[in-house]
Image 1: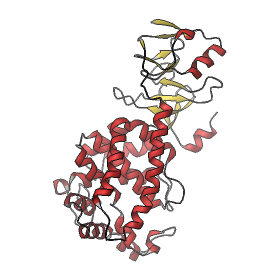
Image 2: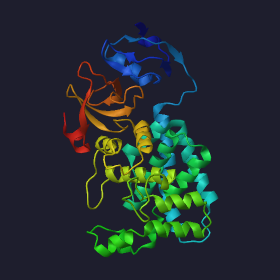
Image 3: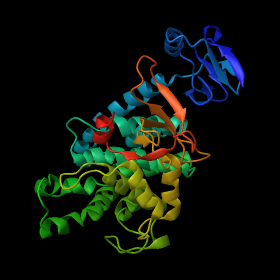
Length: 363
């Protein structure tokens, strides 16, 4: 174990292995810049020395965690304003695939560069303001779909088509009567029959505008299911295109983790397990695994209770072992942000996920 004097560590130094306060307490995960705030807190508490198995190097060009979140949030804010405008423009015949593709290309670039930071923002920030739940669903589903597509290593042109298709997968709902869309009441049988037509309405609308056939077909098929239980054509297995399979998983996962007028949200861990088990075989196994790989068993942003009774929030995934992500501890005064690598030992394993309400209540 290498010893490092706190006063001699340069700001924004990166350690190739975890940085420890002692044999058990991890201060920072690998490649996390050493901040002046952390140094000041350590010195204030009279910790003069820290330890690491790795080596330190100075990376002047590194983008801090805070900067990454700021960049992601700026795009997310702009994207959140763009989606409602897009649906208003949907009533016009001059809606351009090329213009929309440019917006999706920006999202693709961010996700391909740092999908974890973007998804952490998505899970903690979420769509707010005056968006209807359907527009919020569209926004979040698009980001999830692009994250899955990036995990599947889709080329850029395919990712853009996937993103545009996901943006418009519910455009047919805008063609239905407002009483069906604003459903803060129980749906009638007639409402349900109307909703079943929205993939066809979406397909007809995009086809009339000359959108690529792959995009139009994905929108038509996004409610089809692997076991043939979907609609509108009761397709199954290989009859369903890859884009539609990805959108199906993305929008179903988003629906599970979000509050609706008629149901409460499930936590991200429980929702992800549902897709990984895929017991009803409604979804493509490869796409479900890609969702799991992208989000990890304990997704970024999830509130958790550790075996030692401490509460934390998942800050980063652990590709080598999804059961033991990196978490940020809470309730530690004056030290600032403290990250630890969960493990089977010393009570640092995850006991169970917490709801937001439980997280706020547990001491």
